[in-house]
Image 1: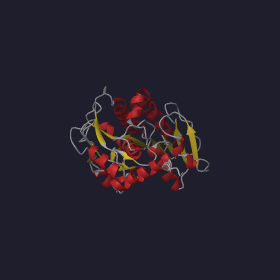
Image 2 (image 1 turned 90 degrees about the horizontal axis):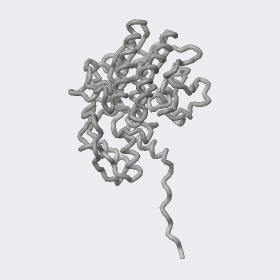
Image 3 (image 1 turned 120 degrees about the vertical axis):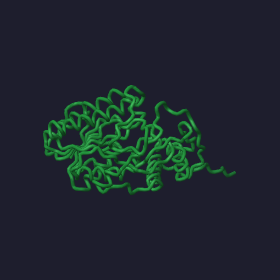
Image 4 (image 1 turned 180 degrees about the vertical axis):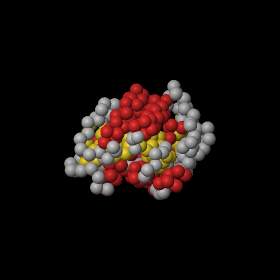
Amino acid sequence: MVVTGGAGLIGSHLCDWLLDRESRVVCVDNLSTGTVSNIAHLRGRPDFEFVEADVIRPLAITGTVDLVYHLAAPAAPTHYRRFPVQTLEAGSLGTRNALRLAWANGARFVLVSAGGVYGDPQHAPQSESYWGNVNPVGPRSAHDEAMRYSEALTMAHRHSRHTDTAIARVFGCYGPRMRPDDGRAVPTFITQALAGQAITVSGDGSQTRSLCHVDDVVAALLALADSDLAGPVNIGSPAELSMAHLAERVRALAQSASPITFVERPPEDPQSRRPDISLAAERLGWSPQVSLDNGLHRTITWFEIQAGPKPAPPVAALF
């Protein structure tokens, strides 16, 4: 099995779960946004291979390939705004090369797309039949259009070359192994709360998102690969929460005294993201199992461990 983008948040957890299934896993990543630390615990295993490579070039993978998960794309705002050309190339050339690998081996291909294909939705929840509201030249266009093109290319392969494909649209994935600097709300709020800094909420905090723990996302991706469903299929939580409420929950769970402050909202920041997961429930028997507080607690604990022990308070000198 091949996992492109395997050193990222979802990809590294997916590698863990696949190895637990006694699969041989080849992890491909150029480490532009993924990190070696996410897969360090897997290095040296005979059933795991790490290939440092960019998917925009043809993938030279040896051995039997019966499943390809394609996740190689910058997902966080900080990254796709810093690397817009690379983001679009990963969605176009990268998807082409991953599809060719699957097609040449007669393997099932699972594209991990995102809720960004819906842009700034004009109604909620978003079902798979909704075509979206995307600005093709806006500040989020590199990510949103890369995902939309990768979906179109995947379906073209399915129809014209009979490649066994599936498309997952993931909403608001979070959990351990997120980068603290990726610009998304969860790692930003946690990092600020643990450091005792002000938790910065964009706008008035009324904009909403649906967060789904990485363990739930991976369970859905495994179920999708095992099915005959082509998709696209939404993967996420139907529970919607405001960014102001998220900041409050992070502060409480981190036992932080950080104040919550409001800053200028980024342009074209979507007002609402909430998936309709009826298809996933019906066809995959899937729904998220990790509660928000449980998932946030586990993520906060991981960030605390990464930060290391806090320095001991100074001891008063004795005279």
